[in-house]
Image (cartoon, rainbow, N blue to C red; front, side):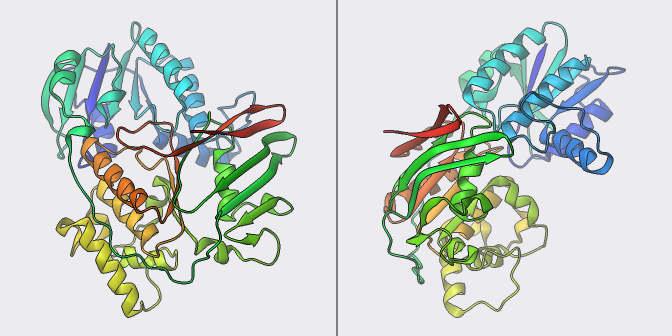
Length: 412
């Protein structure tokens, strides 16, 4: 049996999981009394990685990686699923099972779970209707209080539930802050860049030029080196030294500092949000983007306050006079993009930004990115395994297998 829980970003997912696995919340629809259940989630992955550090135990290994911590996010999800299935549980909780997973693996997971459902119970947590397994018998829609608002068959649910394209929003961006940004074009030039870790090759002779205003999607299978490539561009990877790279008009290794590079880049990945635990106001969160700091520690200038106010106005009245912690996940994501954009960087990097966004918030996010792309002033690198409806990058850079790792191919 497969049962799906359709959530919005107002739901408390962690509390919901506890209520299902410990308090039998879904007893009217699927009785889990006395059954042994396991959780497939980043929550489980984080606990296992912590166990690796604390106790030097590595229960999940693959031919390519000897620990969870050394795997990419998608490889972690795939390896965890195999590990949990081998434990032969009575039921599996599947928390956003497709996030960070490449398309080929998504197809394989869908087929495996469908076959598995003949023998055990599967409970799938989703934020997007397209992610629900087609073999699902029952879909439960949840409200912000983690209460069930509707129970219906898969076919009935798919017929009436709104998709992202049915949410209409339009953003008008504020006037840009130019600061002292470089005038180099291309912004990024990589020439025959190769990276390996110990005896493991990752990137092989990668060539990539990113010009002003271009909108790129970076794609490739799990473990192809997408994160490695991004850290080379952001200056965070020491293996960039000795490479033939030009970053914002500066030759890599000629005396540039990491701060020279970072001031040219706005960067956002959902993992960043967990680092911001202070009860800062939304306005101060946006202002902190000028210095890429976690929190606001320096007195902002009048102009910085003015620019942050402009972005706050663009986000809308529901963001004003609130703390960051009061916002929903989707609202926090938009604040983080405004934070990345407030200094109007020549390059914006968005790494899997729509993970765990519901239909409405994904639509808001896509409209915001489209508004930025339409300016043709900020180059964008968008990394995702999901093809978002209505999000249309003008170029695709794909990492494909080569003799010694992965190399790059330009599509479109």
